[in-house]
Image (cartoon, rainbow, N blue to C red; front, side, top):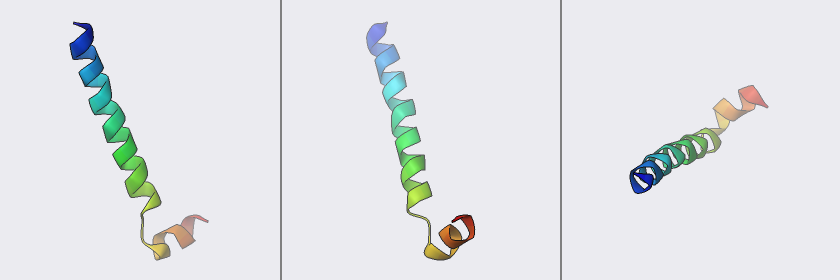
Length: 35
């Protein structure tokens, strides 16, 4: 049970990391609008 929960958490954590990566790797013209 704990192992399954850990795998689920890792999946969510990886998804969050990927979304952060996408956020920081946006094209320059999009980041200009934000900053």
